[in-house]
Length: 567
Image 1 (cartoon, rainbow, N blue to C red):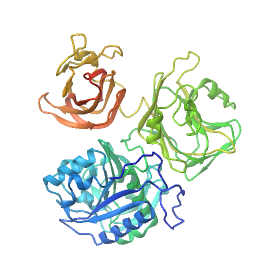
Image 2 (image 1 turned 120 degrees about the vertical axis):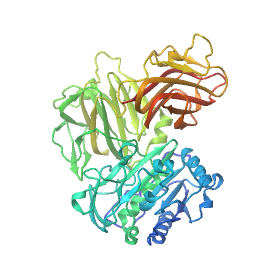
Image 3 (image 1 turned 30 degrees about the horizontal axis):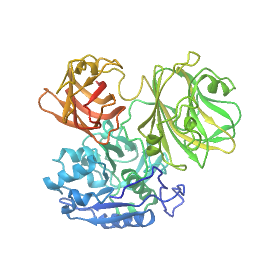
Image 4 (image 1 turned 90 degrees about the vertical axis):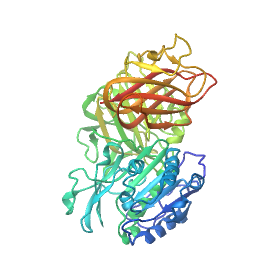
C-alpha cells in the first residue's frame, strides 16, 4: 500500500467523452488496486471487460491494477500492498475463515472496498461482509432501461452525473435498504421500469466508512457495454479514488433533511451586487460582493449541509445567524458568522474558519479537503450558541458564540465574493433540531463503572455527569475500560468522548445487552486526544464500554466526557 502524504486529490477522469465533462486537475499520488473476481455461483460474462476497463482507468489515472481469482491473495501481508480491493461481480462463498479475517483487518485498518454489481451476491453467511457491502442481492427483472436519480452530486463517483441518468442494465432489488448505515448516492425510479420491489426508496449506489476503512458499492455493471460507458467508467474511477483516499466525501448516513435549494430558488433573495446563476441544480457566483440568502425562515438549532466547489484561488463562504439584511450584505458580515471557503488566506479566514473569529483545525482540514475543481461538503451544526463545522464528514472547527451582540439564531446565506471569484453550490439542505445524532445524551448521569480509578477523586461517574471540569482517570496501565448502563435497550448512533491530557490512542467502542458479553462496534487507532466524536454507529445495546488498549501518554486514561446518543 502506498502512503499518501498530501490531502490534495485529483481529477475525476481522463475519459474522452463530452457527455460527462470533469475538471482537469493534477494527477493523484500513485496507488495500487487489487481486482478480485472469483465466482462460486453465477458467472458474469462482463468480468473480463470490467477488468480491462479498470486497467485502462489505472493507466490513465496513476494506479496499478492486479487482477486475480485466487483467494490466497487475501493475506495480511499481501493486502497491505493495496489501497483498494475491488469485488468485481463475485458470487457465493469466495473466502475461507482465515482469508475473511485478513480482509476484515485490512478494511478496519484503513483499506478500501469497491463492490460492483454481483458483489452484493457474495458471502451471505459472513456478517462483516454484509456490513462492508451494505446490502445483499434479493432478485432482479430482465435487463432494461431505467432512470437513476442522482441523490448526491458531490461524491467523486457521482458528481459528474446529471440529476436523472438514463441507462440500461440489470437492476438489483436488495434484501434490505442500506440507507440507515450508508450514504445513498443514487436511487432507481421504479416508475421508469418493471420489476422493482423496493418502492419509492430504491438505492443503487452508496458509500460508507467502517472504522478507518472506506466502502463504495454500485449495483450497475452487469452488461459488457456498461464498461464502455463514459458515465459508468467515471463512476468506477470516483469510487476507487474515494476508497483509496485520493478524494474525500461525507459518507455518513443522512436522513431527515429538508431541501432549501436543489434547483429551485424559491424562498431565496439577493442582497447587494452580483448574483448567482442557476443551471443544472447548481448555483454559480457572478460578481459581488453580495449575499444570496434564504428569506423564507429563520433557523435556531439545526444541521445545515451544502455541497460547494471553488475554481482556482477563489473566495466564498456560508453565513449563518444574521437578521434580515434587506439589500445590505454587510448585515450578515457584521451581525452573523461566516464559515469561510478559501484555502489560501490567513489561518482565521481560510476554509473552515469562523471568519476572523476562529481558525479551523488546519491539519484536520487539509486531510479532508478536496482541491479546487472538486466538490466538498460542509455540515454546519448549530446547537444553541455552539457551532461546529464538518468538512466531508470530518470535524474541523468547534466554536461557541459569547458575543452578546451576535446570535447564532437567524437566516442563512451564501456569498458571491467578487468578479474574480468563482464558487458553486449544490444541494443546500437543513435538518432542524440538529444533526443525525439526537441532541439528548442518553448516558447522562447513568450508572458508570470502570476497570480502575487513579484515586477516589476521579470516579467513573464523573465522565457521565455533563461537567467539563470533573473526570474519570484510570490506573497507569493497559488495558483499561469504562462502561455505562443506559438502563434500557437503545439503538445508538454516536459516542462522544472528550479526553483530558491523558488519552487513549487506541480503543474500542463496545456494546453489550447484559454487561458481560461484548461486541466491538468500532475500533479507533491513532487517536491524538481532545474530542473524539464517533458518529455513524448502528448498534442495539443497553451497555456501552470504552475499552482502551493503548495509552497516548505514560499516564492512564482520563475522560471529562463520555456521551452516548441514540433512540
